[in-house]
Amino acid sequence: MSRSGAEIDSCDQTQLQRVQNEPNQDLSCCTYVLWFFSIVIIGLTFPFTIWFCFKTVAEYERAIIFRVGRLLPGGPKGPGLFFIIPCIDDINVVDLRTLSFDVPPQEILSKDSVTVTVDAVVYFRVSDPTMAIINVENYKRSTELLAATTLRNVLGTKTLAEVLSHREEISNTLQSLLDDATDPWGVKVERVEIKDVRLPKQMQRAMAAEAEASREARAKVIAAEGEQNASRALKEAADIIAESPNALQLRYLQTLNSISAEKNSTIIFPLPIDIMAGFMKK
Image (spheres, rainbow, N blue to C red):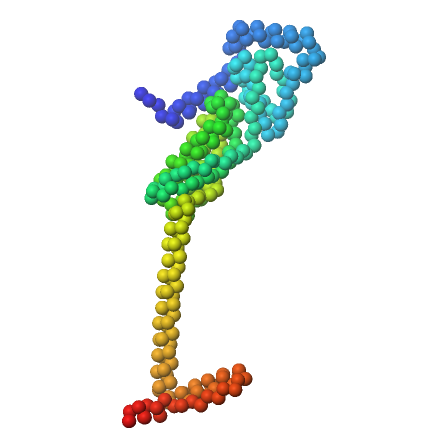
């Protein structure tokens, strides 16, 4: 029967803890022989070789030591000064600071059959130096390849509108998937951000024409609504003036007052429309 991914990861972590905690007596006889001769060489060449026996790592680094190819118990060394045997010890220094890399631009076919080019940036750090060295050959390169593949898989299930408007949601989904996948490697993905979404030139022109046509349609509708409201206001004003004939004379006087305020030489004599209506009837 096949085992699930969670069971496999649990077994790997258990085996790793057993390797880290196993005692030194489990080492082979050849290892003891090499260790003995290395100590003898260091003693004979003292104090010249003492400078190669002490190593230091910075506060943000940890050292993973392999003695004759086997992981030393006790976990990562550092920060500070520690002792090694140069002849049989191999050191791997791991940086614990947050690292970042740019995901190369990926050409993705969206759910609505639109080709877009998307690039992103990923921030991650090493949470377990021992697992990052033992469980994966190159944790940074592996994380970069996995990020590019996950970006293509996730955006392939989204439409163009969702890619453009739901960037934060897509970033959170990418961060969660990458964090779960890189957890057996001792890597913690802290943040994923989509930097840019580029469309083909033809698609950009089509979207610009669609947006321009939509704006023109909205402008025509707004102008028509304004004319409709203005006609209603004029009709209400005409009804009010028709109820009182003197209101029309007052309106004439207001018009003359506004014209005379401009200091021009034009003289306007208002002609009552009622008089013209009488002639028109005859």
